[in-house]
Length: 300
Length: 216
Image (cartoon, rainbow over all chains, first blue to last red; front, side):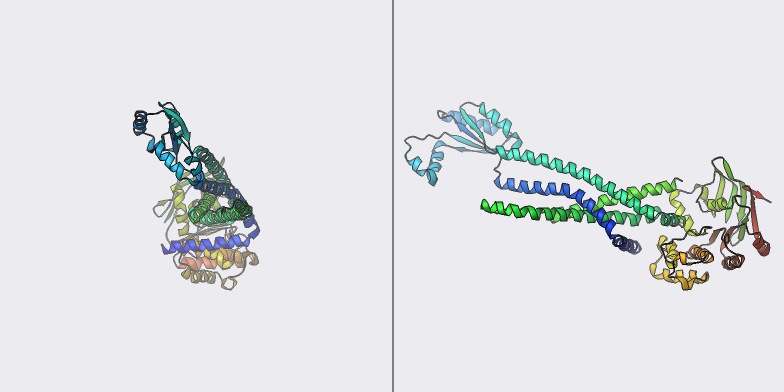
């Protein structure tokens, strides 16, 4: 175990030295990987921010159901029964016209108007919370057909539209991540292939004097993983720089609307995931590249 | 220890070796002689599993080398010391690093390897050149470096392909003396050569090849 650790440590140091020895070509490959990864990362960050904004405005999946003015107690209890039976209803609350009027009167803005009312113009109403927001549409459709129901209002229509937009965005981010992750594998495959070509003799000699494929593969795997990791870090920096400049404008805008808002970068967990993801893809690209080369040697 | 049984090797339509059978006992020093193209290199390559035989079998101890799995070949080669005609040195590494390579490959304890490497360099007379690069060495010195790399793992079998091929007679003799001293400490040697003058002088056991066949 100690021997294994010591070998890996030495290979790691040697690989870092190798990267440092060719700073320009390392820098360029890292930049290319960084740019490729910054696109899905940036998309993800923007979506996360949009979602957190949406969450502050979001109301629960709620429907307001207004009874007809001439609805009797019997009609109201009929609706109540139906709501109790409906499996997509999470819970509901009855707001009687008296309660509604009282609230209306308490609201300072309208207290003058309310005081002058001769009769109560407000209907009985139910506030219904659905279990899932995607059921709202069909629920309101059914409720409109119920007897003595005057009006059904979806309170969170725009939130659901935003939700589906965000879902679309998330799918797009995943596709971007898949495509550009594949690009990372190919980029690494190629840089490692070039590296292998410069070390062809070393590989041949090492094999001739008893090196296993694992031994030959190891430094290249480290190189690929480190390059991927550095590319992930570059993507993080690109996104952070982009957010910094965007936030300059957003702060200005937020002040005009007298709110406080700034775009947030990836949190700790997400950043670590990004680094892990990019390192693994780099490792994979390197593995494919060396394995292909070794396979070509062995099959001679 | 080493036995070839009716070994044949064909490259496309060309038969490099035909029905070659012989055996070598532990501690022997055997020369493979013959003209260029007689199959000497092929024979040595088969023993190190660099090539696979087309027919027959090759045994080292109880291992069937011709049928060795790809993954077992590295471990076979670690038991052998290989000296190549074209040296196969790494020109971007120092003399010391070249000799260190086999030890790194077999994950030898790095703390002990420095003394091993110096001992091997001392045996071939290159102790003062540790920090040199192979290009700074003469042809004979490069060959000695290749030998140092072959013996640093202390193999029980040393295989040398034309080790004196490009050297003048004075250098050749130095190298042959080295091989004899390895043999005296029990190393089995298999050396190919077309240097008949040297064979004349040493009078060792000789396996002569003629157009891929054993000549009696």
